[in-house]
Amino acid sequence: MRSAEAVRNTKETQIAIALNLDGQGNGEIQTPIGFFNHMLELFAFHSGMDLSVKADGDVDVDDHHLVEDTGILLGTLIAQALGDKCGIRRYGNCRLPMDESLAQIDLDFSGRPYLVFEGEFHREAIQNFSTEMVEEFLRAFAFNSKLTLQVRFSGKNDHHQIEAIFKGLARAVKEAVRIESDRLPSTKGVLE
Ligand SMILES: [Mn+2]
Image 1: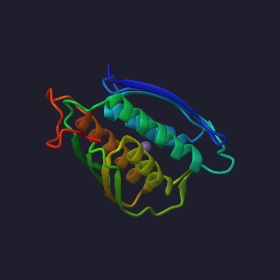
Image 2: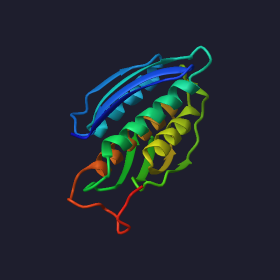
Image 3: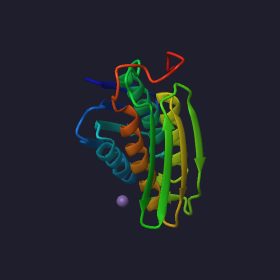
Image 4: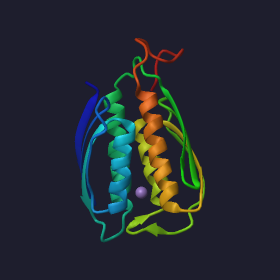
């Protein structure tokens, strides 16, 4: 079973995540940021993983610590669940439209963390979720899962743009972690 769980407590946030890469897309998400809950639920559903996230923290400061720390732990646990990555497809791609918005996600569980993030938001925040935190979340996620992640998006409505990014990311991750052989997908013989 490719699963992992951990608790990460700091003076700023308390986060507990459990995931199973080979799940049914069941999300059990509980954070004080409604829009973030919406995105993590979509992520669980479209990635096909079972994902439980319980996060609390200093959202009286702002949403930065909680969203970033959730990205750190989620990325860490995906790397842990993947183990030596033997047999995985490794690459994932998804172009995902949502009404007028389009997100294009290209990723590689290369072991070399990298983030390309190209697109513009039009407003500061969606309720208590800052649009600038999308990039911070993705960077934390990519660096801790050792993922090369390229995200490009366009659109008019920021709710749509962000939703397209999270759904596209989920679909691309689902494709990349799929087991399709019995060997490591690298001529170098190692993916780390
Ligand atoms: Mn929505």
